[in-house]
Length: 181
Image 1: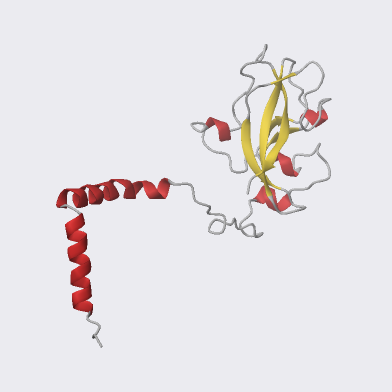
Image 2 (image 1 turned 120 degrees about the horizontal axis):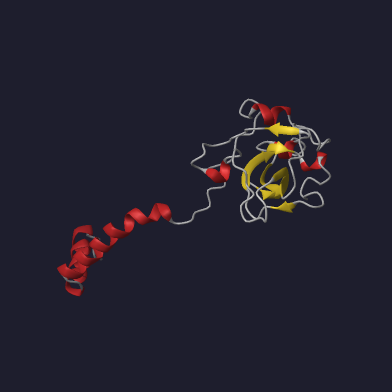
């Protein structure tokens, strides 16, 4: 009966490996691994479990804690967390539609609002309605998670009537895009 010897087994494996490969191929593989290693964190990986948002009352913004879901003509309506301007629901339009005679801007700014009924966050696209004089009713200036002007897609201080026939601002809509997370 032969006795198992780890040293001789290891030596045989290493000699076989050394006979089948060269130093150059080993160095090229090692170099490729060193070059590719920094790219691994950039690969898309599901981080849903690691990044579950904390939506406890203490972590919510003031707007999210006091928002309501019943009256879309009030500034504290849940979709209006980042709106700035007159509400189209008070100016002859709807929450996601411009009043007659006004034209929706093809560009928008966005916000992430929490619906108090289900506790989920939703992406809202705020679009200005243009081409008519300012409505002047139900003026809101909610700045929940607003960023500086150098990040314009998250800033509500810009008149977003770019691409319309007139730069006259009338009112703003709040279109539900979908669930944020």
